[in-house]
Image (tube, rainbow, N blue to C red; front, top):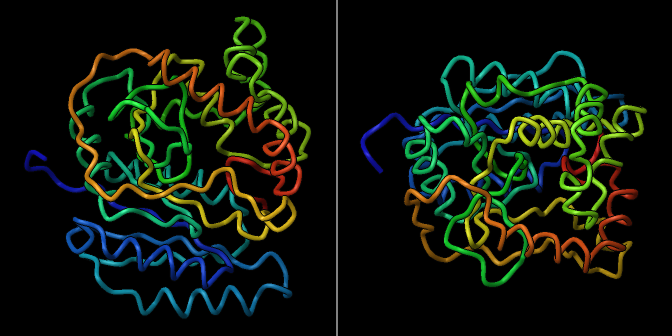
Length: 303
């Protein structure tokens, strides 16, 4: 990577000490970890029943070392996952101009930070690129890197100019999708009903920030850059797997190699989108089951 200031890492935590510890231990092994600033947002307990668990997490994060700096922001009141992420990302990206975002159930390859910083630097002046994703579905045969229209949320990065496109109002997003006849493409040509998730967010049945981030970027014809092999594994679905035959269709083997970031043509990979659609179609029953168990497929649950 060309000489440039590394992006700050923002981590959102709540009441899962074991998950948080695994996330941190993997992140500390990353290339660039010791020269990166880590900013942790710790949400306040929603009620007394989780207060002890939240305090356990807060005690743990105060012991974290291995980064250039560690800053902890303890919420005084419960923001909830969506509001915490929206407010936190906005605050940090407005200050630093770019941000790498993780939640407390994401374990990373040691090449994750390298990939994110390389991509943030290479595409920083490309207005059509809104997001860098470290996670990709367990699909074989994908290119080294590729673009898909929209935005993603399991270990991701963005710039201030792109995050400015984020629209909180789900109803506005849905109206625009319907008005422009983009619902079918938004749903990966019917392979998975992300529009239904957006409708449920509007109705208050979930509080997904991520489906709104996806819709915001999608409607502006912006792209996410993906690696061909995942650099992020979500360990937050472990209990959900118990309810679905102990099978997690999102499980991935982390890349053992660096994912090279080279300039590629700024257009959506139709090949990769078809691969995504086939994955969604093949696992549609499981995805629906997961969504209704977790309440929020993208953000890993509500609080």
